[in-house]
Length: 81
Image 1 (spheres, helix red, strand yellow):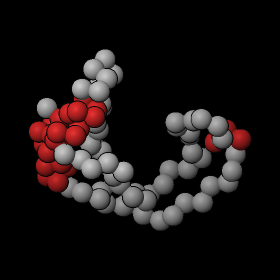
Image 2: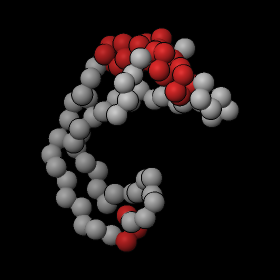
Image 3: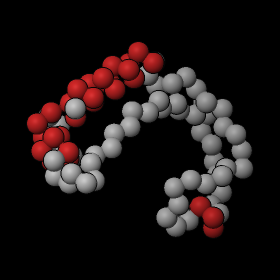
Image 4: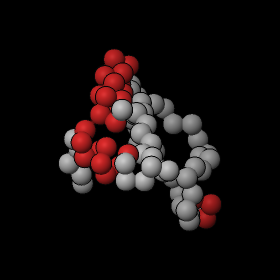
């Protein structure tokens, strides 16, 4: 866990490794409408970022609306420059 202030982000993340700067992504989180059970399959194992699922889950409403996401993005931009 990190204490996040504009100064600490600049010092610890932006100026720490100038060639490999911090990347920040504000995402729209959308929960599933209902839980989904998946069987364990060998192709899901190991170091894999993405897997194809054998179904299309039903999604609920986004956790935050567009205005809230825009506000967070603006705060991040202000903090990290």
